[in-house]
Image 1: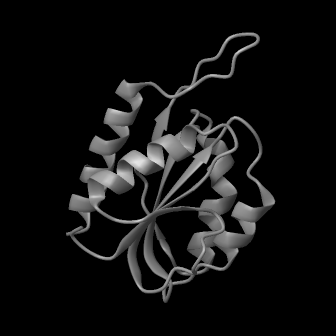
Image 2: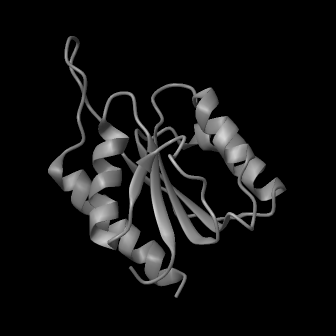
Length: 140
């Protein structure tokens, strides 16, 4: 871990969780679900993982509303799903609270069948880990 950071996720289908666990392992930091067991304090970077195939959950909105520069300086999003328009409200809340939101958002398309939910691929996980390294290095 190069500086104080946390990886958080909200995942009903398990896809954002799979990405978050791989990113946390690579960055040698803790990963936790939203809402986290302990509030974020003095983080240089908070990586938030979501599944963007549905509306953003109320718990995520409430968590983001509570963030400020004392809790985290920077936030970056990674998504299982490619509909980043769902992040617009969260980004505006964070910016309104004085938190820097990084423009670089990782997305991967999760494909499923008619009767089978989609899962992130190993390739998507590798790409997410590479993205996290790029984000971490950009703040050094």
